[in-house]
Length: 175
Image 1 (cartoon, helix red, strand yellow):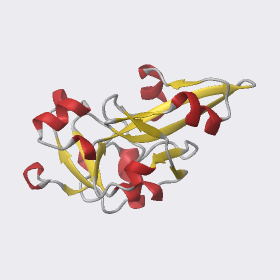
Image 2 (spheres, helix red, strand yellow; image 1 turned 120 degrees about the vertical axis):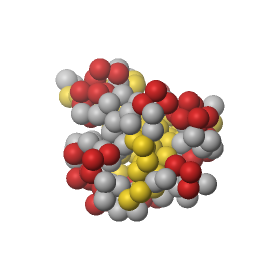
Image 3 (cartoon, rainbow, N blue to C red; image 1 turned 60 degrees about the vertical axis):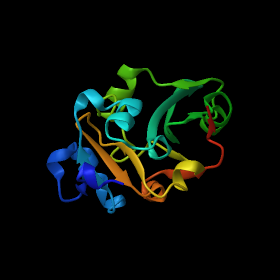
Image 4 (cartoon, rainbow, N blue to C red; image 1 turned 180 degrees about the vertical axis):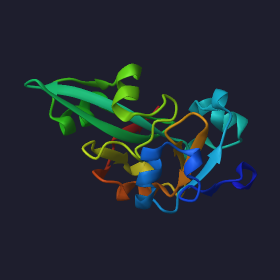
């Protein structure tokens, strides 16, 4: 399925990903990387242009909340055809009154990555990474590479090898 993308070992190609992402690839050594036109970095366009099934497209959703002045955040991994349950599951896991999606400028600043390419690979170590069970159970997923010029392919279960990663049942629901 991926041959026409010409994916290569991400570990062997540091020039294709940001330094923080490359440094974290040792946690997901099976990861492959392929280059894309940055105009096609958004999930639906990427799937259409590169003939990828939506069922393998996974998004990193940065969420945040506050409790007693303490800012809390997490990265939620969900398949593109599912929606993270921010109001229930995420709110309870963050232990906050109200959880929300991080605004684009906050997500970019906090992750150090480009919007449209944010990935859990290379996030700051203190960020929890919550992997929806549907992502973990997917043989191969296509995720951001930290920039808009590449994407990573890796076994969904490998995301659980990242620091702070946790499998979360029903983190997301079908749209």
